[in-house]
Image 1 (cartoon, one colour):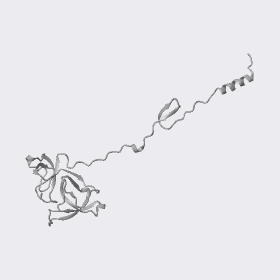
Image 2 (image 1 turned 180 degrees about the horizontal axis):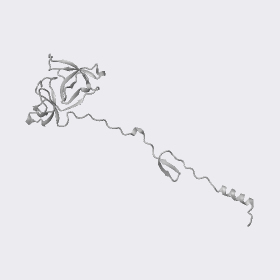
Image 3 (image 1 turned 120 degrees about the vertical axis):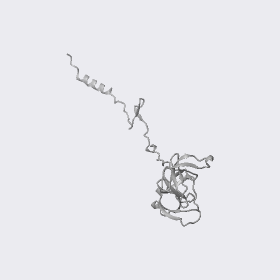
Image 4 (image 1 turned 135 degrees about the vertical axis):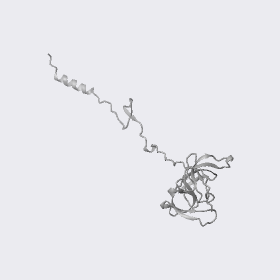
Length: 204
């Protein structure tokens, strides 16, 4: 067996090192994406801004009166402004020229004078309301206050100086002229509503 010269082994080692190169570098950007075969880089999609988050819609106030319902004034004191009482009722017959614009209704609330389930005709009704807000309330506007459960009466806002406590003073009028029955009451605004249909004006 022939012995390989030492200088030949050294020459072969140097030759192999000169032929060995470092692999191409790869740059990686944070985030998921696909690689580009030409550049060896990984392309990523831009991150979505948090400002593009979807906002939840606000919960709408429940319709009151509900569909096929109405607030109907009963005959007792129906000509009075603040002492007329509007009962929650189911519409049995809608108003029309044939009914002289009167509704036939069945009461869903009761007092000692009118029982739940009673049927009557009336043209004094409230078709749509909403809960009053602190931003809209002002002196002179007409609001509805609860005379009983699902029974409402009208009043006029007389003083808002305690609105920071969510309280207003209501003026209860019998009619267009001063009367001994006129009086003032303090109410929390969370208990008051506003008639949208029809829109009432203060009697004075």
